[in-house]
Amino acid sequence: MPSKKIRLTISDLWSNQYTYFILVGFIVGICAGFSNVIFHFLYQTVHLLFISPLESGNMVIFGTIVGGLILFFISYLSGRDDILGYKFHKFIHTISRGSGVISIKETILKSFSQIVSLGFGGSVGQEGPMAQLGGSIGSIVGQRIRIKKSDLKIFIACGIAGAIAATFNAPITGVLFVEEVALLRNIKIRSFLPVVISAATATVIAGFFSSDQNIFNRVDFLIFNYNELFIYALMGVAIGFASSFFTKLHFFIEKKFDDFVPNLKIRPIIGGAVLGILALVPFGIGLDVLGNGYDAIRKAMTYEYSLWIALGILLLKPLATSITLNSGWPGGIFAPSIFMGAICGYLFGFGVESIFYPQLIPGELTTSYAIVGMGTFLAAMTQAPLTSIFFTFELTQTYQAVLPVMVSSVIGTTIYRLIIGRSFEACYLKKENLEIIQNEESNILSNMKVNEIMRKDVVTIPEKMTLGKFIEFLPSTHLTTFPLIDQDDNLSGIISVQDYRGWVLEEELREVVIMKDLASTNVNTVTPDESMLEVLKHWDKGDMLPVVSRNGSKKIVGILARRDALIAYNKALSEESSEL
Image 1 (tube, rainbow, N blue to C red):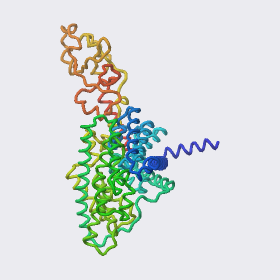
Image 2 (tube, rainbow, N blue to C red; image 1 turned 180 degrees about the horizontal axis):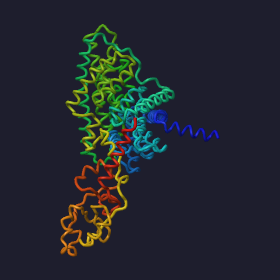
Image 3 (tube, helix red, strand yellow; image 1 turned 90 degrees about the horizontal axis):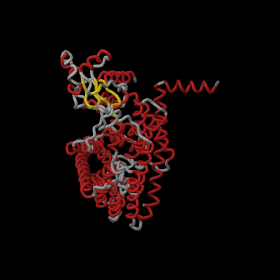
Image 4 (cartoon, helix red, strand yellow; image 1 turned 135 degrees about the vertical axis):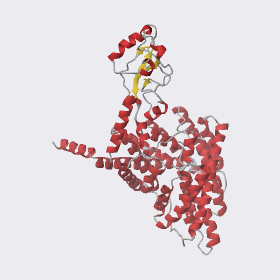
């Protein structure tokens, strides 16, 4: 029958690894592209309805307070604080340390809060939220079609790449973002194909449905001679210091919020009020620092700012972004970084143009410095110069911009690292004692759960069993280590061959000594949901670990043997090595 042949053909295609990964890229790319279109439409609609009408009358504060109230109620009704503030580092950590399973409810809740934040004027970017949304969609798609757990992170990588690529119309940037910024470095070369396909597919879909032109007007990039690279190098030093200042300011404001507003749920209301006050700063400066800043970048690209207006924006934007994120308004740091970089470059170019090239039409050279400034500031903040270089190239569509941004971004990245020591994301990870898995072995161990390896048929012995009864029992089992249980079947100790082998010949003590006298009562236990990476951190001795139902419990549900763990690890490593 034709239908049977079609099903068999589809099955054959799906079982072929190359076809499988191509389809993965298309499926996730389509989903990421459409989610990008919907996300942008929703937050832009919210902004047009609630913020834009208030701008002319200096009434934006009422809109930002409403946004803060909505975020308060979302957090209060959901009972979750993890939807507030800057959380991209936790998303990275979750993917790195876990299996990549993300629920639909969690995705919807976080997306809605991010739409509110961006729509009501939060001084943040949508790239972080879009990367989280894309990764979550990849995870959900993977779960729905029941793929192998080891492939779930590939779906997430496809989603992240597709989301970033669709946002900027920059597929190469999307692919590199996965590697450098999202830190999915344990993704193998075999996943490169679906990630590229996903980024390209999402870019096409977003471009097809978007009525807006590229957020950056296409401009002619000017560089007169190679001596000008020394000037770009100086700008890299300046932006390295500027980005470091922003990071220090951000964490200083975070500490002040922790000190004076410990209740996380009410912070968005306070943040909304402060943002509304900042919007009152005259000459349009206050309004331009709210939102993602793309309109302000357009103005910088077309030389619409005077020197003092640009300087005012540069001073106010770091404050607005830090207040937004630390008051609990969710969002990303990508757009604020390129915003501040553009203004830094604009000001630097303004000076270069005035001093060295007064014969030029005002703004001709300033735009070029603004473009390089975007890439440099972004490279410094993310410590991802390669992503930033290709990002700049894809925006300008010219090779002339590549060499200046290479020089400037590498120097800016170095200065930032010397001052701060790590990327903006890594600062959060260090502050919260979160560890990112960067090698294949750790990744395999993190995906191995205790409940997949443990033996459920546990052989236990009563703690009051005599040594004689125990010696009679030994020939009936091949085991050498046994958990002890009390009269309520609770774990009370563990005994191994090292504990009892010196007593088996003491015949006169066989009816006197009980097993609890010989056993170790200080027992390390694990839970079924723990990963082997966590287990190995405290598995310092013994061939077996009792598995209890939950932390603090004494009810044994299984036993974890070192031999079983080693076999499971070798099997997983063999499967990884056999895949392309």
